[in-house]
Length: 120
Image 1 (cartoon, helix red, strand yellow):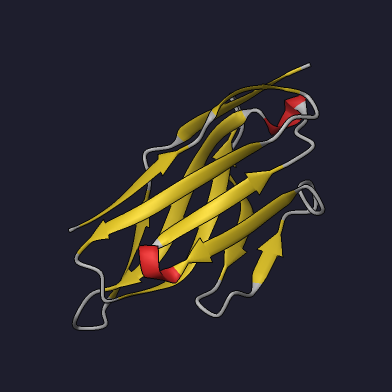
Image 2: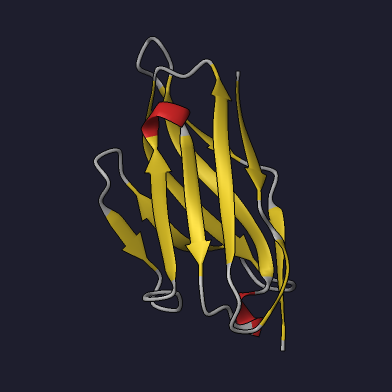
């Protein structure tokens, strides 16, 4: 089985920065894409950013220029550097990954979520 464990959330003032981490462990042969989603109170979960195995990235318009996704394939870890945070960035942030087992079957996993709160 595979687990995704997030860390790095917290409370920060507007304009501040946070760095989230998500480490994958367990029966992993390889990891395809990794992503961060977020869900604010009363809203649907939304895609924030993705990164492929080759390092290609995509961002939601709302975070372009402020957030940066990166990954360390040796550590099976994805990061989200969040700068110039705004109160509207307040949400639970979830890590998501498409992982191949030793039979190269792909499964999608979710982390448990980490709270990010930005005060004005």
